[in-house]
Image (cartoon, rainbow, N blue to C red; front, side, top):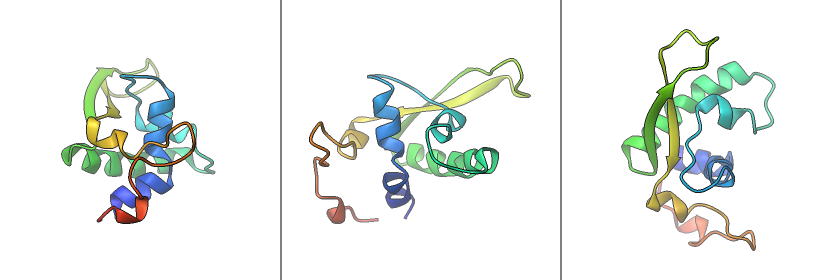
Length: 103
């Protein structure tokens, strides 16, 4: 269910568009989504991203937080080899048929 939601929210493509080896925070990912409440969306997305990280669809790393953030480090997420199958190619097609994804 989480994997399907991440695909429908375009999470993997948002990270992929940032370039090879890119790591983005949940706030950075949400900033590229159409939403009316980015703070709440970032918190909810953070939970999804953690689950995807534990299941090896995303890599998790830490970087220093922005100056106006209350935390010392910020969690960021990047694509793993497993996630590359879930990124659209230049023709707008998934490497595997998305309806074959067992969730």
